[in-house]
Each structure stands twice: as C-alpha cells, then as structure tokens.
Image 1: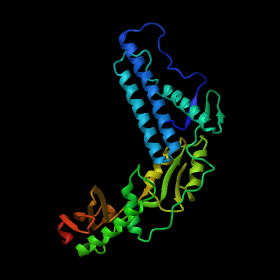
Image 2: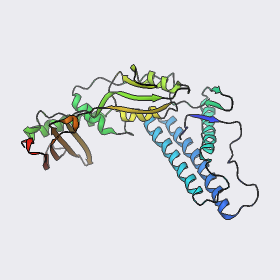
Image 3: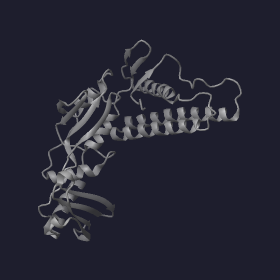
Image 4: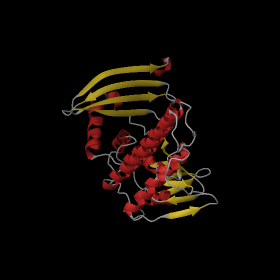
Amino acid sequence: MLRALVATIALGVFVVTGLPGSVAVSGETECKETKAKAAGKKAFDLLKAFGKNTKKSNSAKLAQDTSKAQSKFTKEFTKAEANGQCLTSGDSEAIEVKVDAFVEDAMAEVSGLPTTTMTTSTTTTTTLWTLCDPGSEVFDYGEPRQNTEAEQISLEMLGAVGPLLPPDEIYDRIVRDLGLIRAEDERLEDQTHTPAWAPNELLVEVTEGLPHDDYECLNAHYQVISETPLVGECFRLTFAGNANVVALGAIYEAAPEVQYAEPNHVIGGQNSWTPADLGAGVWHWSIDDGWWDCIAGCGCHRYYELETNLDGQVKLISVEEAGGPWCEF
C-alpha cells in the first residue's frame, strides 16, 4: 500500500528489523540484501520524484512516479521471500512505512513544511509532506472552448498521465479534422461523439478517520463547486471547468485519505471518435457509428478507420458494418 504522503509509524528508527546480527547462510544473506536494497531504492525513487515535482510541478507525473516506486518495492520483497529462506517474512508493509516516513521527514525538512500529528494508543500518524499547498492559487481552467465536441475528444485523448487541459494545437487539429471527415463522408455529418465521461466531475471515496487536509485543499485548488454525497464516504465532485478528469483522478488518488477518484462515466453512448497522433502530422481516426439499443451497447455499428495529414487530406482506410438484419445498412 503506497503511503507517499502520510505515514503511520511506530516509535523506532529507520532500519530493516529482524535481520540477524551474526553471519547468515547464503539464502538468508541474499534475502537480507534484496530487502535492504529495495528499501533504499524506494527511498531514492520517492525523493527523486518529489524533487523533480518541486522543480517543475506536475501532479499527474508525481502520482505515476510514486506508484512505480511502490510497485518496484513490492516486487522486490516478493522476489526476496519466494525462496523461503528469509528470517522474516510478510514484513514489507512495516518496512515500507518506515521508508515512507523517512522520505516524508526529509522532504518536510528541506521544504520547511509544517508538521501535524494525530496520536492513537499505539501509533502516531504524521502528515509531513502535503500533496497540495493551501496557499497556492486556484487552478485556471481558461475560457470555455467554443466547440464542446472537439474539447471532449481532446480531453479524452490526453490520458492518465497527460496534462489537465489540452494544448491549443490539439484542440484546433481536432476541430479541423472533424470538419474534413464529415465533408468526406456525409453519413457522419450528424454523428457526433458521445462523451466517455463528464468532463467536470469525479466520483471519489475518502477514508473516514484520516485527516482530510489534502482532499479539502485539492477541492479548493481545483475549484469544486459542488460536493454531492452519494453513499457512505462517497461523493460526486463538480468542478468549475472542464478538464482531463482521468489525470485529475490520479492526482486525487495520490492523497492518502482518498480511496479512489474516478471519472463519472457515461452509460449508453452511441458514437465514439478516437484520434491517435502517428507523428509527422499524420493522425489516425477510429470512429464507431452506433445505433439501436445503445443503452445495451448498440446493436448496429459502422466502424471507420481513416487518416488525416497536415495538408488536410483524408484517407479512408476501411469501413466495416456489424449487426443484425434489422440494422438496414
């Protein structure tokens, strides 16, 4: 479990515990070495990720890098214990807590960030390195795009580690290509893209009992205008503007109190327009023109594969039709 921002630490020092002080047999020594290296490597990777983010803030990239560090750590501990010769086993979580606490403490020291604590009967939960700066300016969504269909396609194109807002050149290219493709095939004139998700909403679940400092700070920074309770500690967040909510969800999930943060997906979509930049100015478009009972996934489909280039040329690669006899192709 990644605790990149909040660590639950028992009183102690940053050491790999339970390892023998005397000379061990080769299997035990190898296990000890692998675990120690995994702990050190995770600390290095996390400090590197936070350091890069301090120089150039990119919350989505930070979430990706910290997740990779955790995955590598877990993989190495599993590998170490696979030979069955470790003197301790099942201690990855305990060691990981100590590693994360060390990283958070180091980042707090070099950043001058305040420390807040919450003490229980046996452990102390210490917030040392915050994901969100309460003093930062609110996120600027910019002016609403005139072509909402092109904006939605461009947002969906960015992906989980992409920017929150599409660059103008991507949006402008999509506006241009939509017009070119529809002029090329009149069957697509009124077949607009169905959003895969609401561009200004997230579905989130927070953990009861943990401080919600980062969650509340993120809500303020990204201008949540509505927090609608759903069930338990689940909420639908509505933001002041449209964004790549897949990447925004990854930012929220980096907060320790957030269990998940996912887009509010649209059910029953009819059509999808999906572009891919192939390089050298060439874009590939996959278009699914669907109809007939689309709540159940659409019973009829016409699939297009096309390419466009910088010169405005449209190349039709293929058209395939699928469905029952009632589709009337």
